[in-house]
Length: 113
Length: 113
Image: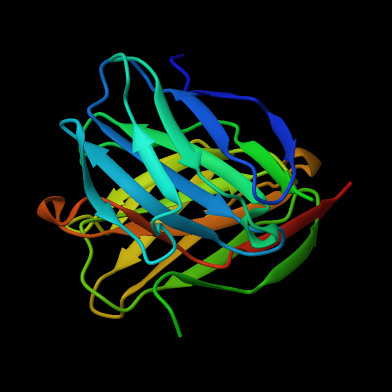
C-alpha cells in the first residue's frame, strides 16, 4: 500500500537553529498538509498546499515557517529559527481528493533544546 | 468547546467487549474521519463517513453520523488488546475550503487481556 514517508524520524536541534523536515507524499496525490502534535495534546493543522502554493495556513504557521515542493516529489517544512515551544511531532499528510481519507506519514519528532 | 470533541477521554475495557467512542463537532462538515494513533506513533486512517451518510462499516468498526446533532460514534466490536490506542475524530469542511482536518482531543482506549 502506498505510504507517505517522513525523514528524519527524530531530530534534536538547538534553539535558534533552522530545521527542515522532509516528506515524500504519495505520488498521485494533489493535496499536501503539515500538522503538528505537541506531546499530550491534539493534532493541529499547520498548512495545506495545492497546485504549488499554500491554500490555507493556521495562526501557528507564522513567518518562521515555510513550505516547499522543490522537485515534484518532496514536500518540506522549514522552521527558520526554532523555539522551545516548537518541540512536537510533525506529521505530513497527502490526499488525492476530498472524497477519500488522508494518508499520514509516521511523523518527525522535533526536540528543541 | 472546539470542533471535534471526543468522549470519553479515556476508556478501559476487557478484551472481547465492545468499545464506543463519541465525537461532537460544531460547524457544517464535508466528511468525518476516524484515526487511530498508537503511543508516540503516526496516525492511521480508519474510516471516513460523508456528510450524506448515516452509517458505515469496516470489519469490526462501525461509524455512525448524525448531522442534526453534529455527532458521530465509533464502535469497535469484540475488542482485542491490540486495539489499545488513542482514537481521534477529524472533520473537514467543504472542498472549496481547503480540506484541512480539525482533530478532537481523542479517546484513549485501553483493552485489557
